[in-house]
Every structure is written in structure tokens, then in C-alpha cells.
Length: 478
Image (cartoon, rainbow, N blue to C red; front, side, top):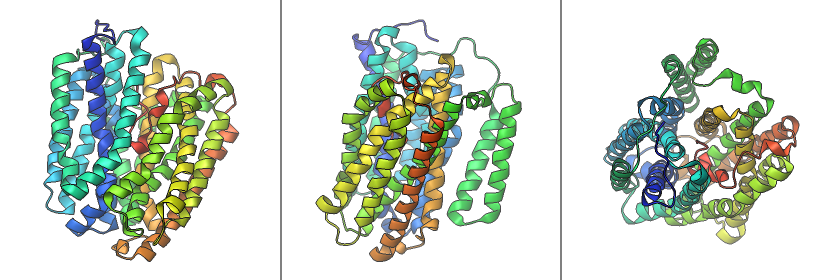
């Protein structure tokens, strides 16, 4: 760990926050703007729904598989060093995405992009925690969350504008100047830090096992390949066995001895699976079936992020007073109601009467849920394991999104070039929203049964930590 303790009010302190915000914004903007660009990518590269699934899932696959390993590498090799490596890797892969001549090359480049994000993302908050003095750390993380939330709100609009004005390739190429700025600021102003006494060895077998498992499951779900699914289940069992037997596991099994931690991650898996499906399919539905332009589709989802920016801190404070159980139960149910309202979205829908009410109710549910969920995860782990607990929860969220994007289209009957028929795609979208609503209800039931209404369960989540939300680009990492 660095011996420096830098005041947030100093010029260097502000530069450190700027570097971490810009770095996390790379991965965050990519998560939001690529969704908006999917229809244009499909048309230009002649891809069906499966290719679009892989365009999203390839990135999430390598990110979810390697994000915990990326955090461990930063602790050992230097957090700034790995943060910069990840930024350069991410930018290089972004260039490959922007120059891709066909969907296969784009998918391969997205896989590489996810590797860069796995190196980059864990270092963002870790650099703040290691460099900013203790009394300023909460305010620094608040600035990180608030500025990141603004970037998340801008993302859909920026993506739509880039697609309309320049083309979908600009969605990836814009990462290059951002990455140059991140590397310059980090090299000039951010001090190096690492764990001075790392214990044990990197869990390389565990990292390989989880990557193989997620890869097989994703391939099996997208391609409807039964053997791959079976082998993926075997690989998951192998990963669990490795984690139970290794001395320094990526995911310490002892964390799940806490009922609250286990329950919170079960809620995370159910809820974020639903959110992954919604954010993948909603922008497609708005463009394919309703006829919105990319800019209009991006604008349509902004109320969700704005509501979270305005209300999430209040939900965090409420959960600190009354406990997380009620917000974690009511939030998913409210979001599920929003998804039922999305059944009104189809050919001929109007934004004010059909789209806006649905996204507002959906966003209100997310605003009630995310902060208490984050607080429950952090409070359930010992203080010295808060970082790994948050990282595990982040990995669970991304894994559930990955599997949902892989599985939902086939389960909903969306395949091939169904997007060429607004009626066919709408029917599949409506089926998928019902499934996602069911997942949210399951999450609410888990919270109601397994989460106790103890205010201390949410007290470890400061008012700003709630702005982290994987589906809109922020991770629960610290």
C-alpha cells in the first residue's frame, strides 16, 4: 500500500479522482452506447440476433470471468500499473472493434475488450482507497459515483448521436482519446500502490475454471448446444471444488457462511439477470418495432438513470434506518410492475403514453433497490474483506447478465432475422419482459424470506455507494 495520504482538496487529489472517473467511464460508456448501436451493427454487418447477442456477451464473458483476477493482479503488481495496462488494452481492442470487417472479428475484439475492462475496472476505486487520506475518502468516492452517474446518463444520448451522425464504428473509436487522457493523468498524477504483504498465490486454476464454465454455458445458451451446457455445468462444479480446496481462492467460500451475504447475492443474481435482459432488448424493441432513431432510443432510457441519481442516496439512508429487507422486497416488485407496463410498447406506441410510464416505474424500483442491496452485501462481510465481498457481488451481477442475454432471446422465441418483422420481434420482446418480471419477483421473494429487517445490514453503505449499478455501467467495487 502506498505511504502517501493525499488530501482531496489538493490538486493531486482532484487529479486522482479525475483519472479514476475517466477510467471507469471507459467501461461504463461502452456498456451503454454499444446497446444503442446494436441495430446499426446488425444491418451493416448482416448479423442476426445471435451475432448481436455475442457482441454483448463476448465482452461480458471475459469481464465477468477475469474481474476478480484483475483485482488480485493490481494488489500484487501495482494498482496504477494494472489500471494503465487495462486502459491501453481496452483502447487497442476498441480500435479492433471499430475496424471490424464482419461480425466474427467484432465478437473476437469484444472478447479482448472485456479482458482490458477486467484489468481496468477493479483499479478504479482501489486507487482512491489507497491514495486519498481516510477523512476525505468518503467524499472522494461520492465524487467518483456522482460524476460516473452523469457519464451513465450521457451514455445513451452520446451513443445515439454517434450512430446517427458518424456511424456505429465511432462508438468504439471514441474510446481511444479517452484512454489517452486516462493514461496521461494516471502516469503524471496517480501514485503507485500495492499490497506490501500479499498472502498466498494467485488462484490461476480457479480463474481458468470459471472462464471455461462461463464460456461453455454462454455458447450452449446462445447456440442451443446441449453438450456445451452439460460441460459448462461440470466446469462450474470443478470451479466450486477448486475454490473449496485451494488456500487462496478467488471467491472465499467462507463469505457465503453469512446468510445475509448469500441471500443478497441470490437477489443480485435474479434481479440483474432481469436487468440484463431488459437493457439488451428494450433498445432493440424501440428501434426495430417502434421505429425510434438511435438518439430517440437513447433518450428514452435516460429517466432510469436520472431517477437513480436523484433517489438512490435517499433509498440508502432509508435502508440504514429501517434495514434493507423492505426496500429489497419493494424495489424488485416495483421494477416488475414497470416491465408489465412495457407490454404496451410495440409498433405504433407513443413515448409519452406507452414508454415513459414504464421506464419511470422501472427506474423507481431500481432506485429503491440498488443502495440497500449494496449495503447488505458490504455489511455482511468483515471489514477486512469488504473489497472481495464487493468484487464477488459485482462478478455475480455480471455473470447473471451474461447468462440472461445468452438465454432470453431463444426462450422468448427471438432468433435469426426476426428483427426484420416488428410484429414477430414485439411478440418475443413481450414474452421476455414477462420472464424478466418473474425473475424480479423471485428476487423480491428471496429478500422477503432471507433478509432480516436489521438496520445495521445497510449501515455500511454510504449515501453515494448506491450509484453503482452494473446494468447501467457502474460496478459495486471498492
